[in-house]
Length: 446
Image 1 (cartoon, one colour):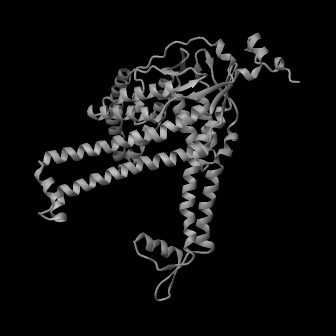
Image 2 (image 1 turned 180 degrees about the vertical axis):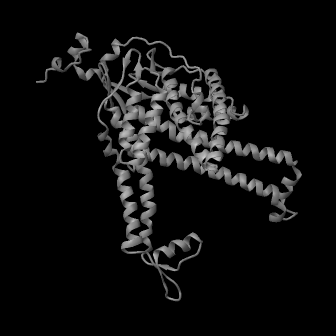
């Protein structure tokens, strides 16, 4: 017979210890519905268009509040208390700083590039390299702001300062990853997440990222298999048994010539065993699946090794489920985008070439001809904005929503007794909020 007292958490009260550790398991529920989210995203997106993007900060705030309130660990909803005015002012501060950087620093870089190297490409390369650290800095700052404006049961989350430390580490880890041809990618993923997690607080409780980076290699298996399939297919059809073609004059064209003819838009004739070429799109699709699988399975593995005093996390996230969500959601979103852009192009054709296409007696051409040119251009502009508004709404509804729901429902706290011993933390103040992430287009995601 198992002795529950021997295995109880040191944070448990006598009554909780007597009840057993199984009673400490805390599940996460998700109560949001797709319909209300669709209309919220549509309404806030419409206001964003009407205000030429100014309402975007209110839109993101309202969407976050909706998502946070739908996520309910132990039945208690998360709270997002971010202020849209705070975001707007932070954006202006970041734009001023970045304008100075882009205007002054880039001018100096281009001057040095022309003076020393007599070429512009060195200046462009140095300018891009100078933006990369800001990109990592902005990501860390955005995460710190979101955590600092998130509460659960009235207790604030938080993230310690360390954005520049994160940026320097990210640059170093990326350099090692590139030098190793991607072999050290799991090391980079783990160490960057450990840097963030070890500086994350819930109230007075500091989180810790346990485990070791080699444990992430099992998440790379689909990507590695697809990469080997791609390399094997290229080796097979390009060297071991090259794909050849035969013309009407019975001349055999080798694989290199076949590729050259296809690039020129010429049909190479009768291919030998052309079904082997299907391995390439299959391998490329596998690489895409492997990248999605790796990203999210790494989150699951690392979540299972996060802990604090008296608190332990668990995750049952499915990499395959996430990949299916991405495929279906992107198909719906980009199908709507494609149909909308096709309608827009058709409208432009009607506007400028209706007489050539339909003749002077065409009813369609007559309708467009009777409208003032400024009105037709306005209608086309509205259609253009509506297309991208609909794309954003569908992306929220069919990608972000199911991802958040799946992430919430597969997360739990098998040990949560330490939550009763957590005290409140001070509110973090941010001068620029998520401004840098917004200015560098990193803050569009929920």
